[in-house]
Image (tube, rainbow, N blue to C red):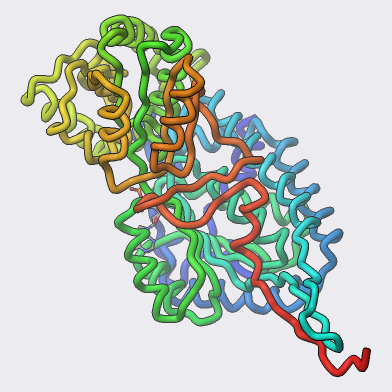
Length: 485
Ligand code: ADP
């Protein structure tokens, strides 16, 4: 099995269909967060390599855009099958560099494949319009055309699926791509090069390179051949990319930070809420942009919720992702642990009560205990900032209005969750929450069929759903006159 895993562990850039090193020969180390050991290197690329990747994508675009939608559909289906045929080695590679449990990695690889299949199908349904004309002798057509070269910058928390929902709609629409995976988890990104080769995509349709984020990002933003940037990552970097992309007026789609609230009302099914809370908090060790950042629980069920949630949190099995039965892996690195410690210390200093976990795990390294903090207050750091770790602050509230107000008191607006057994309240609260995605009595809502994305400073654009391909298509209006009708 390890041999198969190493087949996908490519320690080179994939540019114009060739596996190549950085011009300087420089490399960046890649570490396994469960052991702290270096598992390999990847090229330290900069501007020149990025420019070549963009030029390769532009050259490939000239013929790729002319392929029939059915031809692209068939290749994407082959890509889907190649991913699923190799689910195990791809998941092992993901766990090795990212840390999450093997079960979660297998789930991520499966959803990666599912996005490919979904967009293979959606590509065939990128309809235009024939619009009733106000003129007797003219006709109006509205067509959709591929946008061109797409640059995709992806994060380390879902190094495979975040790429899939950019790459798959781009290729389905007839675009070509330049991809920069996160430096912490480059192999799951580079593996797509091997997979696309195996599926038979033409050289240059998919280009992947690793290295200096700043240099690669600057070239992507400045190069006029790039027509769109799709980014998933921090709000800080997203804003900077939007500003830089403005110089060449590129299309942008941004999946940025979140500050998800999770509301539990007195009339909720508490067991169901606890079950939802576990997945909405601890998936990927709390390192997802849709992970709950703030729990708000109504006074009547507060104690019961805290008790049951803490008990379930204490039972989570923390360990290396490749070990059988692991439910929570390590955090991505030492910096992430320090940040989580800062949140806990701040809460304790302001009267928060640690009722589960609260410190580094006995396993050492970047492992952290699943942590619940009761008596959370709005002046604590996690009211405003994204935790990105296994820490669950639980606030108490009295009224529905108060809860919705607290939930909306953030510049972010990605995902939110709430639990109630009252239908009227379900609609009131759902309509009152300023978020791009709402889970009602559900803690895990991401699926390829639905549009993922945020409002406010959580981003622009949607990934998945039928909406997810629109960003990769340009609308063209054609007026045909002189028809003598
Ligand atoms: P995180 O906090 O999740 O690491 P980042 O926004 O720093 O989020 O990283 C997300 C992606 O953006 C990664 O691929 C990272 O390398 C890339 N990135 C970071 N800084 C820049 C930059 N200045 N220009 C372009 N990409 C960047």
